[in-house]
Amino acid sequence: MGHIKLTTEIPGPKSREVLARHDRFVARALALGFPAAISEARGALLTDVDGNRFIDLAGGVGVLNVGHSDPEVVGAAREQLERFVHTDYTVAPYALYGELAERLAGLVPGGEKAAFFNAGAEAVENAIKMARAYTGRKAIISFEGGFHGRTWMALALTSKTTPYKQGFLPLAGEVYRVPYAYPYRPPVRPGEGQSFGEACADLLEKTFSNYVASDDVAALIVEPVLGEGGFVDPPNDYLPALKRKCEERGIVFIADEVQTGFGRTGALFAVEHSGVQPDLVILAKSLAAGFPLSAVVGRAEVVDAPREGALGGTYPGNPVALASAMAVLDRLEDGELLRRSREIGGRIRERFSSLAEHVKLIGDVRGLGAMVAVEFVRDRETKEPAKGEVGEILKLAAERGVLVLSAGVEANCIRFLAPLVITDEQLEEALDVLEGCVQEVAATRETSPAGALADPT
Image (cartoon, rainbow, N blue to C red; front, side):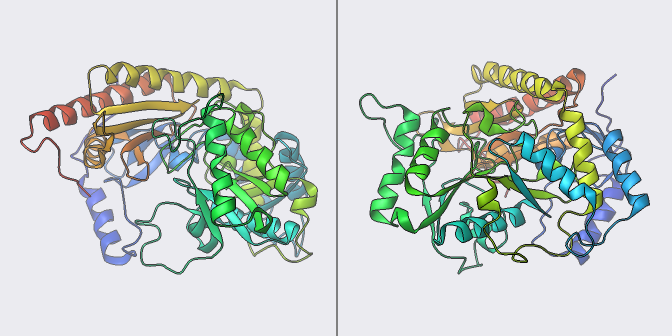
């Protein structure tokens, strides 16, 4: 018996009521990407208000590595709720804050101290504050295709313009961007005796000579695997080469592990694949399995650089979220979910690599652990992004019981963020559906007089 259960059309009548209320009362900018309203979620399954059941390959955009409604996480949250919900840690402190900080400091490469916030973007903002306070410098280096959030500094660091930046200028200043080591779309050719990763890291030198002096740069912030930019995993020597350049110039090296952390790439943190030790690491998303919590973890002298009282807020380090995070770390402790991440990723890459032999629309299949992307192109030679086709695939998948997301600056990638507790049967059923959607869209494109579908967006 399959796990997908469709008892109405998608969206069903009750979902249409929810969506109509959204249109009437919710801000237009909060655009919905899935045509069903969820009433219950367990593991890797979603049930909507009409009783339809879907397989979730999105995981709340990487928030639910341990799955929806994990019993240990829910139990820890409930137990803390019955004690107290809020005091504001800096007003009336509690033990959980220091306990989780100590635990993360022991797990994060290079970690010594931590501070907690609400969301990934807020942690990004505060990491930049730490770096500027520590160095006395102002400029920040970020990367093409990078995504770091939607608050003012985080938005300035983010690469994609529409819909994130358009109409919101001016943003925070002194942000300089360099190309990322993108093997499928290489920004540079290596010189003789030089690796691709080293050649891409050397692009920093042009930035230092043409745009901003290195001794004016406070920090370099980089995703170990591009997230919104298309799940691009760089060569293993790339991050170490960037870190060496930062060390030589006194620049704080910040790893944004918001989407890559807590087992997504098959290691607890993605920087472990290359062996690099950042000065600061930014954590969020799966840290607390759906409760609002983020963290900056790193070298004590950098974390401690802002003066007393310079960081904080009303809700950062909420005790219910902290308790949930402790339960998440308990779930990850034995390494089984890390092993499962690697297994899930292997299955997805194998399926789509095989499909790529028959479907020319697939240009690249890549990823680390269960952080996998399939990039779609209209022509394998020109690599023209197939954004419209991806939109159609996602629409068909939703109608057939699978929730999956796009990625990439051109939105021409499908990314996989399935909860790591997904079963083999659930994964195979979802991949069967998705493979059928890809084949159908590819066949339609091949028979279309224009040779391509219209962009559904």
